[in-house]
Image 1 (spheres, rainbow, N blue to C red):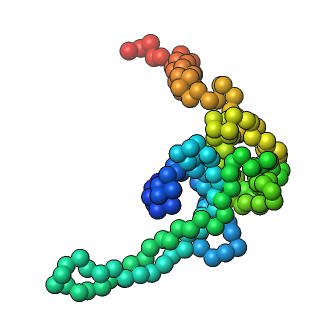
Image 2 (cartoon, one colour):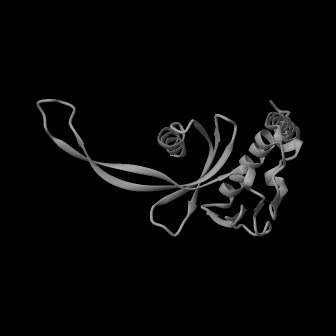
Image 3 (cartoon, rainbow, N blue to C red):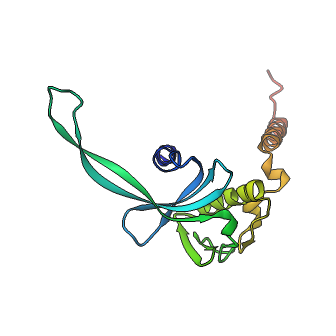
Length: 189
């Protein structure tokens, strides 16, 4: 479902503005409809954060045939950017409390913007994307506070999944050998 949302938002909102949608998460907002926090990169490598509102609109679509004058109802998602910031203007991302599973975090621009993600994993996924984009496009490290660093910047042991898979397979084979060696073998065969 998220890949369909990504494609639709890319087509409707970001591609016309010569931007590429890099990451988005669904957030909770007091206004009606679905809302997303998006980060995109422009053709000039400017990184932008935006709040996108998605409201369902009903419309009618005319049939393409000249002889047929039928109309049918359609339900379409209408995407609109409600707030936009530059990543350069982001001075601090505050996770509030790293010891509590809290999906809420604070984005410090000229004013502080409170964002509530739908889950804590979505919050960390978005912050990891911001850190990578800040390192790549802004040539500065993003100022983070109150995040569990193990989830933001994984260590070398966890970041190379290929080595972990090989190691777990070796351990599995060794465990099988130990179990087989402990099984009694009947000598009366």
